[in-house]
Each structure stands twice: as structure tokens, then as C-alpha cells.
Length: 243
Length: 294
Image 1 (tube, each protein chain N blue to C red):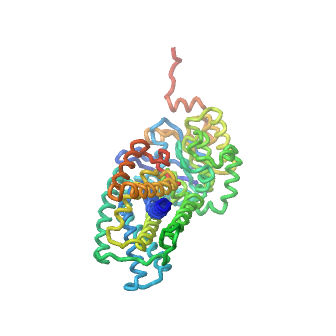
Image 2 (cartoon, rainbow over the protein chains, first blue to last red):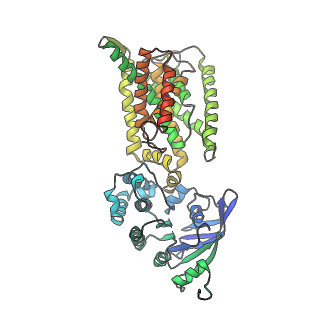
């Protein structure tokens, strides 16, 4: 099977400032991919370049065999690559119902709108209680649920999540992790940026460490990894016991 | 009693025109985030284009055909103008200021263009409905009655469009979060064009209303634009019902003030009230603190 997402030598940035210095990643078949690494080293920039919000300077991005490197975001959405940005504040004045309805904007998703809405409610039953409430009145966790719900309404073939549990209280975070796991188990491949390594290991066995706008390390499926090893990638090896 | 009815009718009539103008202005402000100084000229153009279609000296078509044609032509004009003088600057940090200058320049060019094409001589449009009615001893033209009745219907339709249809939701959404719109696959540029076109069509309708009531001149859009500006600031733009309510309140205020202290001082008083509103509640009387619509 062809790899769903293949990125080669991608360079991009903001203005004249280069953030990504030749990033290459690829999914293996339809498996999930996890990205981790310190803050401010290009993970979010990478995702924004994939979804077309930022122009790539050079390199290629292929989605399911199609070159999407210079496509407008809406055409990328239409192909089924759906990006849930970090801390998405969505549309403050729209209600949950209206926001989800907008999620079914791509023509590809219109036919399944009702079924997708049922699916969102099944995964996030809490949203049903606040159906006609404005998004501005929701908590951070609820807003994150709506944000993922909108993505599900777009009928994703690949779901790109940028730190979905950022800043959430532990109980809400567990709830959201379970929901994301469920979405993955139901057959939507994911590309996830996440700081919570346990959660990332639970979701994906194919990981990339992004550091200084480059891929510092790749952990391929089947390769040994544990929490300790990943901590060492973040912070460097601890040579001797601290005294 | 007669005075009261007269004031109320005047408020309803002028309020309808102001509301029609203000909603278009608010629509462009909320979706694109720029203030469109061409809005008054769209109104002028609406009246003149309708005259071109309807006048026996020109094409001589019936009003029922000319009115929608004029709205269509002016909507197309709004679309082109947006593509020429607004869209190229979107994304720049100073787009608000640049758009003030470009739309002001375009409005000046269009105003003089109107004068070149149709001449400075005042023209008049036929009334929507000919005749007068007697209402509590006050004569009022059926044209004015028609406007008082039609305006809420049109504005109600705009409200339904913005609140019930997916395309309308998208127009509101683009005002609130452009990136998130890109990520659900919305063509943001096309929505800008739609907002401008729709606003221009509403202004054209106001122009036709106006032209059947007063003589038309190439400068006829200037004063309604400044009134619409007052209305939008007064009512805020968080919700299209804000400028609509504000339009009727301003018109009522104007009618009372014209009766009590006279025509001459009314505009000054109006702007004094506006400045007071800006000092007390700068986001508008019916508005929260965000830019958004409906």
C-alpha cells in the first residue's frame, strides 16, 4: 500500500525566518504517526505547512499519491486531509450545532452529514447537552471536543491533531485521550503532535523527534522504545546519579 | 396627535433607508474587516442604473424588471471593485487604512463617473407604487408605505440567510476566525466577494427607494453613507439586529430633533450623541466586544 502522507525535504517559515530545514517524514501505510519535541522547534509550523496555511518554500508533500505542496487549504480539505490546529478558538459567536454544520462544508462530506453528526455525538456526548450554546461559552476542553468534532464532520481520511490535550485538566484530558483513541480505532489514521509521551506511545508506534526544525530521530514501528529512552532524547542522557 | 404620527412615519421611513444601508456596511466590515467608503456610491449607482433601465428616455423597461436588474448590476460592480481595490491588500497589516484610502478614491472616481455618464441634472425615478393614502389626516405616498413594509421583509431574509443557511454561517464564521475557515475548506476569497456583492445590492435597493422619493444627483449617496456610519457605530456590528435597531432609533431621534429644534442643528446633535456613545460604550449599544455578525 502507498504511504498516505509523504513529506520530503520540506522547508518553510514565516516571513524571512526559516523554521523548517528540510523535514522528511512518512506514514507507513495507514498507521498513526506521532511527532514530539521541545516547544518552538517547528512542529506546529510543519502541520500548518501540511494543511496549506503556510506556503512551503521547497520540498514536496504528497497525500495519498497527490502532490499537495502548493495547494490551497480548501483543496487539501477536499482531499480528506483535515488539520485540527492547536488551541483552536473556533467561531466564538456560532453555536455548537452551527459550527459542526460548517464542518460538513466540503462537498465530499455533505452526503454523510447526518451520520457524521451522530458519530460526533457518540464520541462526545457532552456536546449534545450544549448543542445550542455559543462556542465562546465553552471550556477549553469542550472547545477542543468541538474542534475535533468539526474535523470529523469533514469526513477525514487523515486527521492531523496539534497538541489536542494542551492545557486541559487531568480528568478532561483522559476523556479526550480516550476519544482520540476511539477515533483511531474506528479507522481514521492520525498524525499527532503531543507532549504527553505516554499518550503518544499508546497511539502510535512510529515517532519522530522534531528538533531545531529538523527530524532529530525517527523511531520506526517495532523498534524498542520506552519512556526512559524518550526522556533521554528530550533532555540528554543522565550520566551519573545526581548527588 | 398629528405631529406624533408624522414623526413616527418619518422615523419608520428614514429608518428603513438607514437600516438598508447600514446592514451592507456592517456586512463588509465584519467579514473583511475594512470600512467601505464606496457604499454610498453603490446607492447612487443603484438609482442611476435603475433609471437607465426604467426611464422612457432610456430603455423604458418596467420597474419590476429594472429593480432586480439594477441590484444585479451594482452587485457585479461591488464584486469587481472589491477585486480591484480591496482584495490585493488583504493580509497586509495596514489593510484597514489602505482600504479607507482606496475605497475613498474609488468612490470619488465613481461619483464623477456617474456625473460624466448621466450628467449633473437631477433625475427622478418613478415611485414603486403610485398614489397617496390618507393616514390619520396625514397624506403619505404609497411609495413610502411600500418601503416601510418591504424593508423589514428584506432585512428578515438577510437575517435568515446569515443564521440558517450554511453559506450565511460561513460568512459569519469568516469574520470570527479566518484560519479555521480555511481548515474546513471554505473559499475565503469568494466569501469576501459575496459579502461585497450582497452589500452593494442592498445599497442599490436603497438607492432605488431614495430615487423614487427625492431627486437623484451624483452626490446623493454621501449623506446616507454618513448616516449609515453613525448607525453602525451606534448599534455595533456583533449582530445584524444591532445596526437595524440603531437605524430606526437614529431615525426617530432625527425626526424628533428636526421637529423640536429644527433641521439645521439636527446633524450636529446627532454627532454629539454619537461621540457620547463612543465614550460610554465604544463597541456599540447592542454589541459585545468582538467583531462578528448575526
